Length: 450
Image (tube, rainbow, N blue to C red; front, top):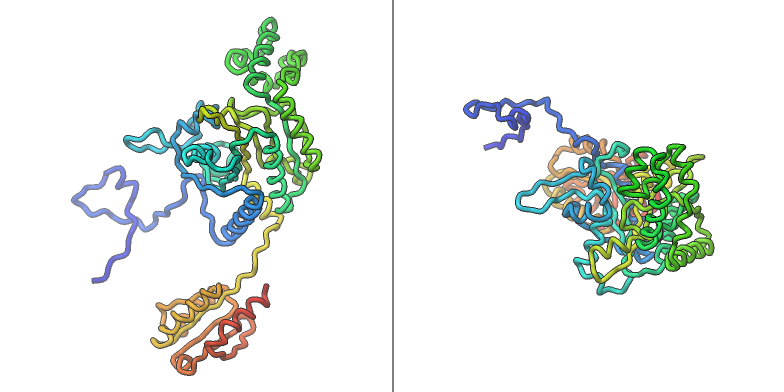
């Protein structure tokens, strides 16, 4: 009995239970299933470029002793929203929650660093040589208006277990070399010292004290910030608020010795290594757990300065997870931007593929084809074939749609003689070679095109 092909039913009608169970469900051949909104498929040339990009990132970062880690695409929401994305908790509509009966709240990861930190403690990496340096390259999920896709790639680097300022320098140096290897040379780091929790608490009190007599002149948003988060006052662009802020003592005056020395050491190394940087006093951390040092990574595209990533020390975040107290530095890089830049500049050059198409005629040749295909696989020669087709005409029709360098033809007579016909796809020239000389012949042809 011949099995019937699978057909799509009217999905909408079935889900709404509007059909009569006693009646047969009519099929709708016009239904076109599409990707979820703001997602996309990656295949063909783009997938080849992506694999090359991925391999190059792995090679460079492993040279600088960053091991790769793969974390699950789902995490418990409390891990993500209680830490690195704490401020995002107020806008949960941008995040993708997974409903699962009997489980804690689960979320599709909107970033990679939370999972990396969780893995460090869960897998007892504190017992390894410190610091532990690792990176993750993978998909994250956020629904933001300024993102083209809800599903996009991030590259995150993390170093845990050492409070030394040299850690930030090492990571900035590695990122710079990574970008330069993709011929993105005009890189700039904007840096700032945001102090430790102690420094910030003292300065926050100074801010409240300064505005105590002036808060009636502030805008409504700044008045609210004075009560909830004084640092948001510095984000206000109202002229009257900017004028009032000008009389405020600089935060630098409230740095403790440790924060001051940490920042100055980083600057000394950046200058020694000739890493371009600018101090941006307006640059602040994204959440309350970042401390001491933050930076953003830019590159010049024509005359425009474009952001490609950011970094931060977040010792306070790790201390909320482990009472033993750990130090950590993280970097987040926008891989989509990196990939687009590379693709547009054609900085990634694919090696020319070498492939052959094997045509077999007759049962004897079909059986021999299995041996030949396996021999070619061992020599890493890509061979395409269609063993389900028997006629020469049908196989040639398939072959014409494939981009191959050579056509191999074997029939019963060729098998008896121990030979195979090699036909050059472009020139049409052909020759017969023995099975023993087939591999050397094809290897020579492959070397000639690369």
